[in-house]
Length: 252
Image 1: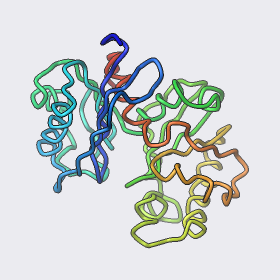
Image 2 (image 1 turned 120 degrees about the vertical axis):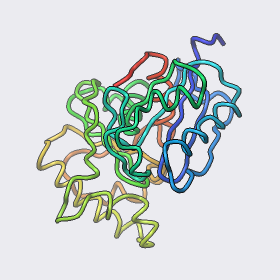
Image 3 (image 1 turned 90 degrees about the vertical axis):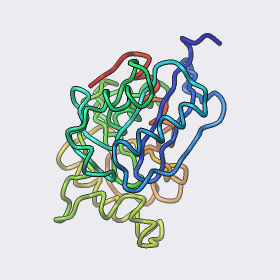
């Protein structure tokens, strides 16, 4: 397989930093995914060191795409969700260029990366009409897609629903933290989706993140009228989207 057919993505989350070599023709991992716990505190320097460890462990020498749970514009982190506040204002391209010793780096919002991967390698639903792609993990990430084209940095997880940030009570981390059953947690997700549906009127919701592997346990419990489909790429999407961004030199 040629180097051009391969890419490398790193997905930085609140609990883990994950990376893998990706076959850019299929969206499938080549070899094993490497995961290291997110350092605490999750400062830029500490996280960049972990990213370097992952890249080195995989012996990857080409372009690297990296996702952040942050609004990223002009390669500067503008917010910090579930990572240290010191990320705000950080030039992430410069940070990772220094840590990895290479210039060919693209950094983008984590849910946006997952969304573009779902468009490329997921179901047809992601490529048609107005779609809201949501990732449920440490927080709730979002990507707005219109006929497969991304509107970046939406961050719906921070929208107030009944006076509380949506991700504070309806993320999968909230489910684990409060030891909620799928039934009780689905009621919370349902409330969030009803609010998103009322405001944005999408043609469909696509739900991703690790908990989407168990979509059969909670998606059928939702009452929102708009169709809700589990992401085809499940929890691989962030890494795949990051690798795509690096290959295409996407730098929001």
